[in-house]
Image (tube, rainbow, N blue to C red):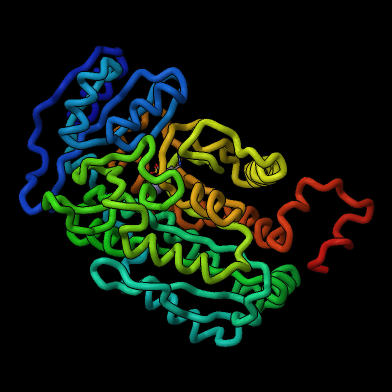
Length: 425
Ligand code: 0X9
Ligand code: ZN
């Protein structure tokens, strides 16, 4: 704690690059990777993209600064870049998760909860697996609808947990499933209408191998990727750099040991491949939302390019939907690449390849530069976040479901008797 305070003071004084030698992690067996926190000067998206190309993961953007996390290789490159202002090794203390965090679901608890929901609501919820992970775990999905076999019903595909340490992104879609099922049963008319006319696909954890690795000891490990063993004996591919649209472009590393490693080829990973196969065999999906953490953002394509979506209508639908949803959750709506360029993410592929309206939410919290040293950073905000974050994101999810019959309705002039004309009523 003292060290934290010391660092904070040093940072506040704006002293240039420092490097602290601490008793950090051991690196043997790749079980405790050493991470460095870095602060960069970056005045715009172009500078931020250069930083992303160092192989670090950008975590916070505040005006003309960026906070990022990376390994020793990234730190060396950062030092050469001339943009680095401050760096230090993250210690156990800073990565530690609060003791009282049992409300988060590990893989066994997640599966149990999904099985329970399917058993409790047999006419509304169907449990299936869309594939297996590198380590052989099933990728469980809940299909929620009054007729889950009707592939002509418009559908929204909600996903979470692409990144291992973003545990809140697993809890949010899981709570959405529970909410829909409970509300239908307690005769909530809006939900009855939705589930009678739409299908909801919920895959809470795309990367259970990574998530399990992150929680396998009593200390959180800040793990991001999956658990593929790479040719250089490092572990993990960044699943959000492994999708096949613009794969291999900017903001994705070719170094297997980096946290943004793109993999050996597009869809080299069983997890991203399973998601691809599911999309391709369900052309009733018109909208998708991939939950991540953190920073409180609503992002839409493109992420691999600064260009706007060239189809004007598609661009307007994404923009309008993002801005509308932002009114409910208070997040910032923007094009992904306004943040920084990153190639191979889920939403670029889903829109670019399949024309599906696609969003990435970066859930809570939003951290200012001076809050960067909170234990666990923004990835481990504690279980008190689970329910409020779900609640503020519920209305955006219901909105996407409502418009999934024809997302282009959001840019049509509203009819006078609005509501009565909705196909839902
Ligand atoms: O970098 C990512 O994969 C996402 N952020 S996270 O902190 N959850 O890792 C954002 C992806 C958005 N896409 C682009 N910026 N291109
Ligand atoms: Zn993420």
